[in-house]
Length: 187
Image 1 (cartoon, rainbow, N blue to C red):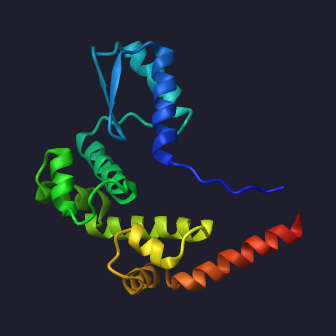
Image 2 (image 1 turned 90 degrees about the vertical axis):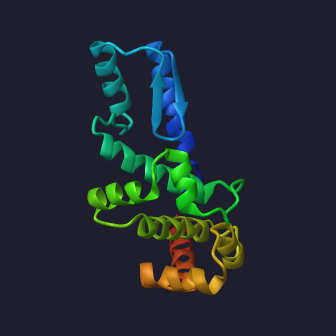
């Protein structure tokens, strides 16, 4: 038997981090997706235990401010795309600047230097990745997906999807459907 799961990556990460830090008895606050503030400076032993415990889940503690900032940009992009409560007509660059307390120019410069790609390109790739997941789940129409991801139209979503993946959303949908049918007949 095979089942298909839908999950919220941010919720899973936050839960794992909370469980591990609670195990250590640390007094902390989680700010957003990738930032934890401690009430007091952890000892070296506590830091090592934290690194080991979180490392078991593929979570790293970042020392480099720029790398940490790039990760915060990525996390904020994901949050902005997925949070349906946020007004999507709100300019993303303004949202990012306000959220991270840096100018967009600075964030863009750091991001491009570290990833060799622009924030705008990352936003597109992330939206297409989410669109692929939504198409795979087969719960929403392409119109609903386009609306959910703040595309002006299905045509706009389709054009970006094809440019990024080489497939139209409809072709991708057919491939996923065939794979699911094949896996069901094998069982």
